[in-house]
Image (cartoon, rainbow, N blue to C red; front, side, top):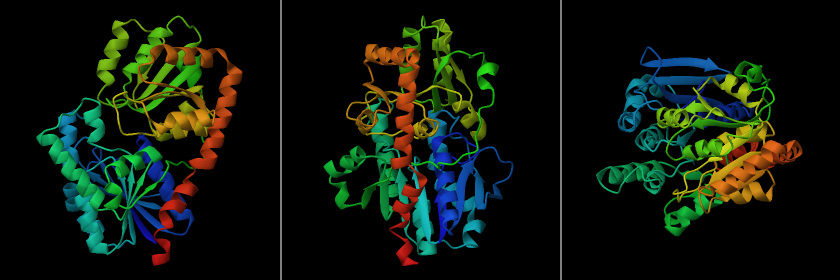
Length: 397
């Protein structure tokens, strides 16, 4: 099959969606399919850039800034994604045909583009839904119900209606749709996040370069925005400021970075630092030298989330220290498989106690980390994800 994959971030971005789609595209290719990736990119000099990367055709389309933009600018640029990608990439689409479209959310703004391409190619589509927006933004207090909310709800419905099948990331997400009786309108299933289980990534001497030899490094990688409540991690660093072995390393970008750097400086915290996002290989090499993977989700979220960053943690046999919103399936998952220590966001004393345990007990870190790797192999492999998606469509061709 010729498979078109649409995603907002693609390599070399360190956003988790970039690696998810890259790993899935490689798995499709390994199985004899012909994947092509289309993604926006604000850094290319021309309107489009077409390359072959690891046997995958990649079309990058120049758009306005998204990841590093203000909320208003990001919203406006995202709202234009379908139109911009169609207009600038029209020649690419007109000269090709596809048998399946796989598209990724976030964003909610691919719906009109997918609908147009489905009609053109007479093919089905599969939505990989990782973010229930705008609901999470309302829960987190970022968005109020009003005109903007109504517009986002319209685009959300448009995004869902363009899909023949929607793969949500957890049973709790499935229940979110079922309790609203949306399972009668949309065809839904659980599609867990995934990663490839073979990577040629080796540590690159980052501990020595960063002056962290002998430290237990608590690592957070990826988006640093409102939904992640990274203040939670800053408070944790403050609680452990007298624990000489513990260090908190955050690598990524997002709307909250400037403010959080000011908070860290104003509180005189020397056991935590936020580093700018790096390339994918550099990110993975850095991750390979850290000890504990950090997960933080805003307490107010009502929709559930299995952050993509946890795949990298599990790949490198890192135990996870997670602070999540109430009712999140992730708590049960990590506790049942003994792959990490978890608390509800806001239980700062419990979170600090968990961190102290992990900092002090190497054997505990190793045991939980080994279990995390087993969980990855048994539940979150790219082969399972590809099986799940393709099972719906391969018989048609």
